[in-house]
Image 1 (cartoon, rainbow, N blue to C red):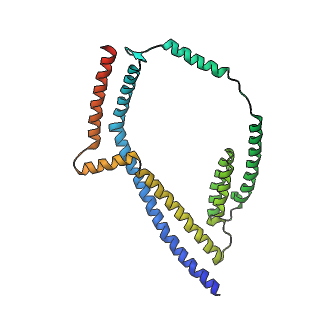
Image 2 (tube, rainbow, N blue to C red):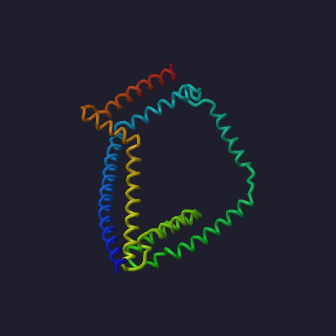
Length: 254
């Protein structure tokens, strides 16, 4: 009886923890979605205002580099015939290449394929959706089965085994309706929520470390100070485009 009270007490605590952690998870999930949308909106502005001009500048600089390297003159490529000949010679080398089949490697691949098939059948027999006893378990089994099929298609045995581990660590794999089973499920739900929260935090950190996010933050800070960084960047690129066009004209036609 004392043992049952202990289980019931911990179960109540774990359920309260699940509710609290899930609230934190949903809050971070919403924050990630808002961050993505904000960055996506800024990227569209950046592409429309700055990126298109940057492409033009890069194209002009590429032409200047070719002129400096002596690859084009008066707007036309040099040594076109020799270039075509080189391409043809490269093609002929490929055409004449002798392909040697490594029989030891082929045998090794065959063994891997057989092992992958054995592992696949074993795991499929455990996680197959037909074995689900409720809708939640069926949904997870269906997802894992799809991942298993994909991993088997790539003959990725390690991935297949990780899918089985995921199933064994899931709340859905716990059987029974007593308090001990409920407690075990609650513990696994807590672990799952924590993993999901860490994944979201990692994604947020990745976005915040990106170059586009840094530009967005600088643009927001400048806007509060009454400046338009995108307009300033555009003006700077426009000046570089004009300078590149002038240099290109002089190099090609002067």
